[in-house]
Length: 636
Image (cartoon, rainbow, N blue to C red; front, side, top):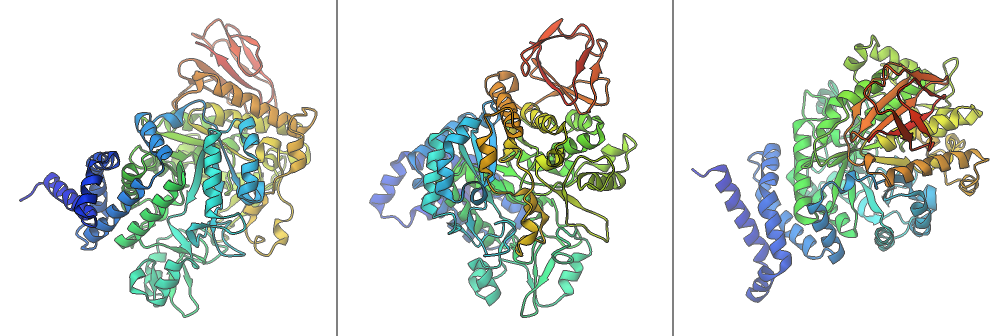
């Protein structure tokens, strides 16, 4: 009986042979002598065992796997052989230096292309601004063809190979990516791989009964199976439809975790994996550097479970990762998992998603502003921040999505905080239903059955800028100081850097009025951006403050890497942490001056330079921080 290693080796030899059989003997000999084939073969030898192992975890003895792999390998070789020389050079560089994303030089930005720049050529014209701000990473949202009208902000994709015509063409996208690379900026795009729109040709053909697309989606003739699944599913968008299914016009039911026009793909069919791997390789060869893996927790369904974060979901992502290591190893994955903190971290690994959003830190930054107490944030930084080698958090203050209070109830319980009650307080606080609140947010997806709710709003609106709160600017700078300095890749939701407030017109648009997230998706505000160099304006104060922190970060190796050690300040309003044994950071989350006693500072140097103010701070005596002040102290 063959060992597992022998089986893998035989399968690999079979697949390589199948790839080459389409060529003439002369062509085959030429290919086998080529540098591309040698490199491709090396990567196959390294990564195919992992791919085979993960697919076996998902599909077992499914007889469709071998013919699927034959097609997948042919696609992979075709993709790599056609990959641009410059991209192959990037592949080699990132294989040699997997920590490139952890550099202190890295600073990210994210924007909707249409809202920020009109279209792709408009975005290209803004590259000088991105360089001025200091960006080295740019996430371009809502690029692909989607239904007109309601499309979940472009996250209902009708084609992964066609740009939304309002933005330009696929050639425009290729041109913009090349221009960004020339400017030293990596490109990030969304890979929405849990679902497609109902207008995708796969969905149309599957619903019509085309055998080539049979079981590409979960379509049921009646409610019996959906009812069984719904017993254990969480409602994600209760305002849109109850449960996890939507009814088609012909009476059948289709799985729709999110909106009724977003049909979940059926990964129990190996040909769905193959089809999506092909789309992934297409994007990689456009020059995309990072794929944001959307809604990773939901991609595998199993009766009797929540259908979230199941082992097969991880195996599928690792299998996709192995395909990229073979066909485009310069491309990294970024996970988007808004689930329990224990589950979030499980998606992050060199063989899964090399980087991942840090939703816990984001939520706790807002929690700490509301409570003025750093207990939960300190706990998260102590026990949940440090990641495996060669991986990084993407730290952020706001995104295009809502704020969900994703802290762990067991963590809160250690401080006598009841999770459900505390979430209700935070919801009321940030939608201005709490006496003394400075925030002006909007509720999102209130569920009257569970009382669950999330929050929408721009960072500026949530820190108090809408009503000219005197501490609003300092609150916003404080939040960004944390994401700039805790380790990992900081991400700016563009518009925050000039204090853009909520869009006030979203509720008047019939395609947006039932989705309050459009409140924090305002258009580019030219007036605010024109004020960014004038520190007599609010926009100028915020922009210059953030730009100053970015410049410090990018010129100081103390911010390199992703790990930290928390520093207990003995003051419930002040967070403290140490980076690389060389930088001590303090941040006061209160509107009152706060003191760190000399006793708490024992064993620190006699004095240290504060990189933000430029002042020398004596550490052999009490240190006082102004309301919402941040210090970055050089201690080595």
